[in-house]
Image: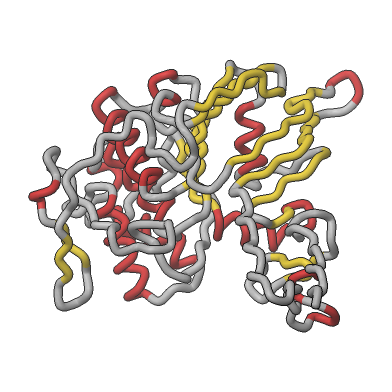
Length: 343
């Protein structure tokens, strides 16, 4: 007997009606089913259920951005198409005024397109309220900026805890996850130091720990090495390589070729358009300049805090072993606790 053919369902963010989920994100009617009930998956009799294709981390379609009116109108973006798959490492380059900063603001949900569509990890951002956009931004994106944006007179640990505090996480869990994130970036011995007591490179590593502590889908960095010396730049780029090698998706805005050389893919912008798109290695490959270090030995004390053995770190940095993660998001921040801070 011939089975009933599977009924196709719209992909998330394809224009179907959407409903607000309990966590403030959005779902589609195709997922929730009639009257908000559970959706029944279509199957083919006698055959395996088709696997759902995982949504891209970033999906922009014909995105434009216009500032001003009349004679003062500026077309910052002139119809950008860009897809960034999970696990990719993208560098965005361009001269001042090329549109790369505007593109970063839209990818980070800090600004909205004038026209076009932006789907972030399967969620159509245009269909969300401002509150839902804020929640999506905080849960799915970790930000790293050139100026660090750390709170002065507050310890490194408290700075990293801040996103979890805004999300309402319990104090003990916040402390555990922030400690692990700082260990991940090699600052296990700087937990109590304030930003003024840290070098520029150390401050940027605190900012990076704050960005990853919430386990975001996307790590978005704007000129992350612009204020660093050459040694600190190499340290931060090494951490970016390590994070991407462990499965994290990175988008880095930069004008430095030294930074873009670490990315798997580089796009160049001019006059609000992508004019060049070069891929160095496949999405599934390791970053092109990544130099893996000896695996780190992880020790957990009686309180559950993670400490790293120095034997695997030739440069004196500490880190946590991410061999035990199985969901593709390794290291600090793994788990269901939502994010909760705006840059």
